[in-house]
Length: 346
Image (cartoon, rainbow, N blue to C red; front, side, top):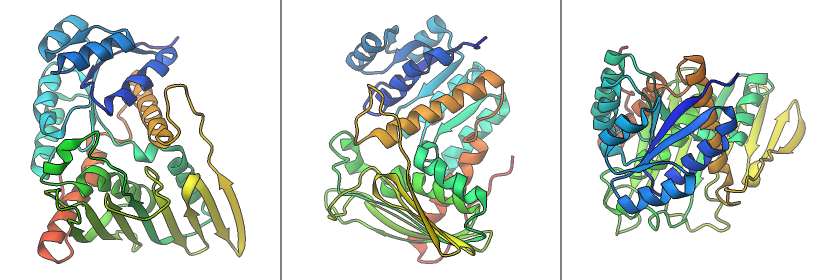
């Protein structure tokens, strides 16, 4: 028998629609959407009507009336610390959108609160749940590439990300914290933990307050080196947004993942190719499919772990290791020298 998990959605904006559609799709697996909440009453009402759930503008009222097992937070990062504290104090499980917080110190506060209350806290770090990235991980784990030594992970686009998120213009941190964190997480997943980081940032769009471009080099504990690139100011055509391109080299072979999730593997001089196909569900758009599928896969993972009573792969302990690389990248860009990721002792 499927164990039901009562879910409340906190935040009903642009990206939250992917979360809501994913939870609806996962209803047969036990996901029960009990409530939606947003400070903007119109957004809350619209989401409630679309997904057939009571709508709220007050977090406290929502918690008292809906009594959720888990709250999925898809609000801006500067609200995460206070919201996580409220939920942890009530013993409610939390799934919180990335980035976890604006900076390392707030991340630590959230981690300390979750540890003190012993609550489930997962970060919705979803790029590693993209089906093509899961396939890359499978190939690495198979051993056909041998010992990994080098990689390049690239997210370069000129897509107008500001149209749906105009607040990006005024962020103190942008490219690394918004999309770079995803790519840095993939570097960790593929090549292991990071010893130190070098970073150069650029502000190529005069309207943007923070960096819109970052080029980072990571030295991994294994000895491997990876280059992580991200920009919102590329003028290259075709623009493959929102895809991440990947190259990995090892002692036995190499892997290249190009546009449309085409994977080419070279091993012992032999080349094989495959394309990772994903099912396009009714609520998905072709351009956004790789991201929307990753949200569905991430939510399915969280749901399963909640039902089992186990921590998520992207729990607070794991996500702090990725955020530490983000923090090191900003420090390196400021100092002009390679920096070690900060440590957190659990």
